[in-house]
Image (cartoon, rainbow, N blue to C red):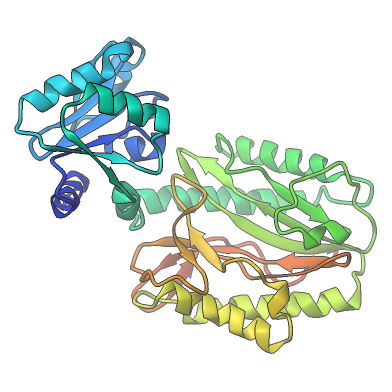
Length: 354
């Protein structure tokens, strides 16, 4: 079943006659159009991409399955009303997570049909990756692996966290990435206890644990990898913590597969860390979907009842964080298979001491 057929099936289940899509990533997913502005209108018989004159040719080239129409952006909803008038439209669905209140007010004043907020209609389709999407994410993961291999030759005492982040992004761009998949996290020494410690001016010191959380943005898709290394001999306590996190990750990777809940997937690393006495130091979920966005459904956690399915691409990222001392996180990207997971981030996970 094509993406459009799946979407129309979902709309019928929601009793919505038409769906208006304005979010960038959902628009790109459905149409292939990579421009920065445009509106998708899906009915049971029509699939339209409305763009202004800047994007007419690009959209026509990229969106073969869609009727591309050039419009005046100031008359967007008048154009949509004309489309609705061609069919017996009673209910218009819109993306409730992506439409501002201002946009909603404008829409409601211009359209005669009843507006219906819809949640995660396209996002749910995006959870299962196509073969083409998986290949792009694998390439993004390869770019990350190559950058990690390089950065090990660059890191030394006296280099700042921001210098490391800049070098990582530069190297990823040299290997074909558009840029970093997100703001690169480089956290050293006591700052490694910050799960999202974005790179600062702090300089690396001998004995620091150093967490590097980064990914490549490659042809619209993203990777997300974390490795924690030591620069010189680290504190013994953090070496012990490192081994616990490493073992918890292996536990998760060995047991995850299609058919289990996100809650169960989360429990593999979490229960292991809890048994070692660090439950309170592992405060985030154990992973999430990745793809066009860096954070996509599903979000594995203690309350996630969503089911892992084949060809989902997820992160698996246990961590332990001890305030004023430091922390460890190790993260892989994986493809869910019927009987397990395929790890696509291949950088070494054993503790590296530079």
